Image (cartoon, rainbow, N blue to C red):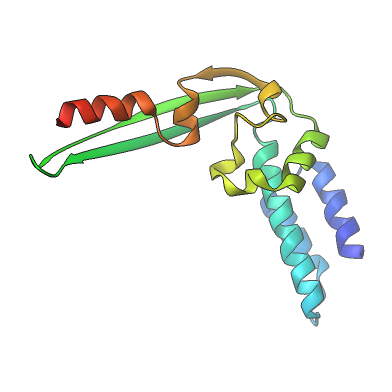
Length: 149
């Protein structure tokens, strides 16, 4: 429980994730049980996720995605990339905690899930397209398909 309390204190201080990991490593004694290792790894992962997502609060994220389409019959290959930027309002710690506890944002790249009901109210500006942020820019894909036909 001491490790739990210390990781919670560090998390609330908003220090960098590398400092959190170093702090947590130093908090674990040299001879530890399997239960302590699991607890340590969970909190190391939790703090890392927390600070990655907390970095979006009041800031921005840039997503660059690429698409390659190949026409196997004609042997034509076309590729391109697209960039989108998302600007966020300040995101309260309670919202970040809720998103991490829910777990779904841990399954998406960068924890960036615009369409989530807890995230959406904190999106200030989207430059580009939401589908590009989600992973596959539809208009770019359609354009490349047309070019290869």
